[in-house]
Image (cartoon, rainbow, N blue to C red; front, side, top):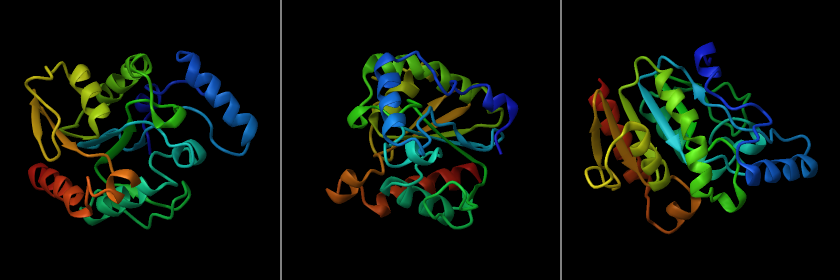
Length: 215
């Protein structure tokens, strides 16, 4: 369950800061009034040592269900991997009431609102970054951050004040930022897995390392 401190790091349901995303969200609400259609809050425990940062909610996934990576293919691979390495327990059934619980883990996104074509603009990533920074600040025990994809990696570099030349994105890489370790993974999207950019074994290897180094 999220703490009050963590809840305070989330944008409001009608966040107006990115006009393009607010317009897109309004159109989705009109088209699918039963969907969540709002900035998707982080999922997990603020006292977790592991933070996972994705790109943004998917239209059919988190934007529909209101829970990160829930309801699309990326969630199938992510949550199966988290269960395998003890960062989640229960059964993932692609809906927010499936009873799945995260263990020592919190999942968030670089951009909290669904963007058109899954592509937030640089200005939107910049505008949403303070929420990501506040999330990290609200996690007193965080020691490891997994960036899912280059966009998450790049915004985390700015958040953690790391220079890109000193911490280039590469699948399986680890970079230090003070007491934190930043781990890189290709995003667990259907496109990446279908094209072989990311295999389940490649993805598991990142979390195996995180688990070993946290323990």
